[in-house]
Image 1 (cartoon, rainbow, N blue to C red):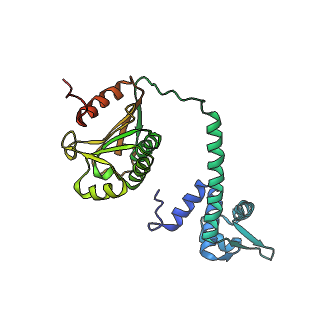
Image 2 (cartoon, one colour; image 1 turned 45 degrees about the vertical axis):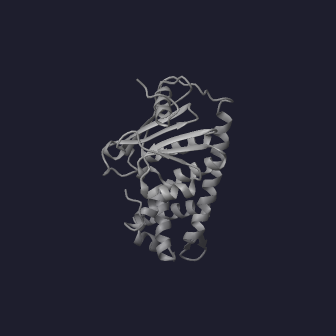
Image 3 (cartoon, rainbow, N blue to C red; image 1 turned 135 degrees about the vertical axis):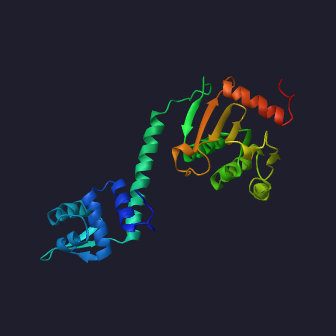
Length: 266
């Protein structure tokens, strides 16, 4: 179902309200009241797919969440809070839930994560791969080597790289087109730009990342450029960590050779 308000604002609003925990009837009732301003159960039922007898149950749910006020008249009138106030309420609720979740997960994490891992891990979807790249970049202490196509060098990745550079991490970037080099030089001072290992744009490769010589990630673009970035099939990656991890060993050798610190591998 589309959630773009420009396509169908009513359906988009109902879908998002349901994701915030409202029942279908409550979401439809709230959206109806938004368009009405105020209204009775009959009014709400007339402009929504909510049976009149179920409007009252929906109002009780909304009233308990602080989303509607009730006028004790005959018949009862209902008034919905503004869109801005609704957003603020849900933002506060979401912030609280995220805070509780984060605290709980931190309590559950082992005191020390294993830095040495056998084999590789997979991650699917461009957003998920980007999140993993940013996470690894944020954990870097000494060096980051990153090759990518221009379309995947997004603002959030550049910001993370820039922050890493500010704390003294050495940044080497490959596969960057001349169109974005000026921005790289401005946002990531001191970043070293190097030529790609191959004609990057002619391959389905997405990204190559090495962090501190001990953590690496490799991704490929799947099913061509026509796949939306939100589609899990748009990009898939494997990553590994540890000095002796096979993926780390291979990419470390390639990057070390490419950056001129060793003889070409034979």
